[in-house]
Length: 324
Length: 282
Ligand SMILES: Nc1ncnc2c1ncn2[C@@H]1O[C@H](COP(=O)(O)OP(=O)(O)OP(=O)(O)O)[C@@H](O)[C@H]1O
Ligand SMILES: [Mg+2]
Image 1 (cartoon, rainbow over the protein chains, first blue to last red):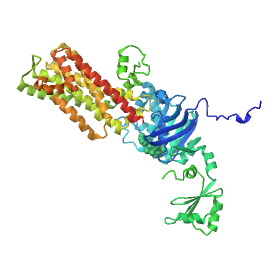
Image 2 (cartoon, chains in turn green, cyan; image 1 turned 45 degrees about the horizontal axis):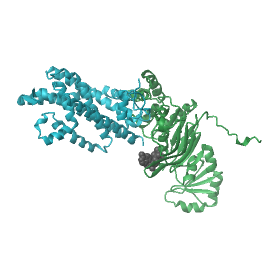
Image 3 (spheres, helix red, strand yellow; image 1 turned 90 degrees about the vertical axis):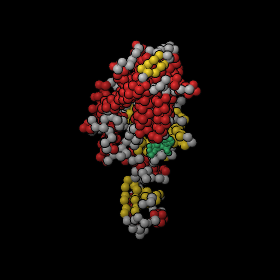
C-alpha cells in the first residue's frame, strides 16, 4: 500500500485541540434580509483572526453570534467546542467581548464598572478588586478610577471597555472594531497590548475597517462583503494573490476626468483602478511605471509609489474602497 | 447557594420551586446571578440614597393631609359592619398604593432608561447572566426598595396608633407581594414601549386605580355594576389585603387577593424575561 505522504496535513503551531470557533454554513437573517450568508470558518487556539469588510458586510452580526448573544438562523456553530444554543452561559463565561458600541454602565464609576462586571462572571469580591486595579493600570485609567464614565473621552471609554472585557481572564477575546475612535497613539498602544495578550495565548477574533490594523494584528483574515467571504488567508498571502507588489497612485487635480486618463495609461499595466480622486496602477515596478507615464507625455499633479496593502486586495475583490 | 428556578430538567424535586418553575418557566435563571443585579443597583444607589429617602415622603404626606386632615371631617367609615376611624381605614390603602407606585416607577422609567438608552443590559448579557436573571434581579431590587418604604410607613402607622391587629405582622410580606405583582407587569409593559410618550399610558392606568380602587372609600360606595369593575383591578386586591391585615378584618377573601397578585406577578415576570431575550438577543 502506498503511503499517502502528500495527504499529511501540516498542523499550524497555534492549533492544539479543537478550534475555538467552528462554523459551517452559518447564516443570520433579519426578516427577509440575509446579513450573514452561510459562512464557514475555523479559528484555532492562540490565533489572531480578523474579519475585514465595509459597512454592512455582516461583521458585527457574525461577532454577536460568536459571542452567544445572537442565535444563528441556520448552520452549525461551536464555540470552545460547545453549542451556543444550549451552553450560552458556559461559553460566555470564558469569552471577553468588546462590542462595536461601548456599553459601559453610565450609572457607575470607572472602577465600579470593572468590579460589577467581574461579579457577573461569578468572581469573588476580593479577586475582582485586585483584578480591577491591575486592569486599570493596564489601560492607564488608574487616575480616573473614581470618575463617572460619562465625562471620559471616547478613547478612554474604549480603553475601559477593553479592560472590562479582560476581567474574567478570557480564553478568547472578541473585538468589534476595537480601535475605531482612538487617536493614532492610543491605537498603537492598544495594538501593543493585544499583541501581549496574544503572546500569553489568548485567542483574538477582531473586526476592522483598517488595513494597517489587520496587517499588524492578524495571522489570518477573511475579507467579508455582503454576508460572504470574498477571500481568506494571511495578509501577505492575500496581497500576493490579489494584488501586485507595488501601486502607483496618480492624481490629476480636482477637476480632471479620471476615466480619460485611464485610457491614456492603457497598456502600461495589467490593472488600473479609477477612483474619484485618483488612478491606481498595479505594477511590480512603481518607479518604472511612473517613468513610462511621463514618457507618454502625461503630467499628473502628484505621483506616489507605495507597497500594496489589503486595501488594494479589498478593492480588487469588491470593486469598492473600505473606508468611504 | 445556587437555586435554579426552572432549570431545563424539570425533575429537580417536588418543592415549591419546581411548582413555580412549572407555572413560570424561566430558563437558566439562578437566584445567585439575579442577586448580582441587585448588587449592581446597590452600587448605584449608594451614592444616590437621597432618591431613596425622598420616595418615602409622598405616602407620608398623603397620610397627614388626607388621613388626618380629611379624616377630621369624615370621622368614621363602616366596613363589613365594623366602624373604623377614617385614618385607620385610609392608612393601609395608602401603604398599598405606595407599594404599587414605587414598583411601577422602578420597573417602568428606570428599566426603560437602562434598556433603551444606557444599554446596561446589552453588556450584562454578554456575561453568563441570562435575561431571566436580569428580570428577576431588577424586580427583586424594586421589592427591596419597596420594603424600605413599607417598613417606615408601617412604623409611622404604629406610632400613630393606626394598627389594630397582630395580623399587621404580615403587612410587610404583603407589601412585597404587591410590589412583585406591579413590578413584574410594569417591567413587561416597559419592554413594549417605543418612547417616553408611552409612559402616559402608565399614568392613565395607575392614577385612576390609586383614586378609585378603594384606597379612599369602601367598595360599598359604588353601585354594584361599578363594584364589579373595581374588584377586577389589581390595586383593589392589594388595598384589601393590607387593610385586612392592619384592621384584623381577616377572612377567606385573603386567599383570593394573594392568589390574584401572585399569578399577576408570575405572568409579568415570564413575559418580561421573554421580551428581554427577544429585544436584546437578536
Ligand atoms: N438587529 C438587526 N435587525 C435588522 N437588521 C440588522 C440587525 N443587525 C444588523 N442588521 C443588518 O445586517 C447587515 C449587517 O450588519 P452588521 O452590523 O453585521 O454589519 P458590519 O459589517 O458590522 O458593519 P459596520 O462596519 O458598519 O459595523 C446590515 O445591513 C444591518 O442593517
Ligand atoms: Mg459592525
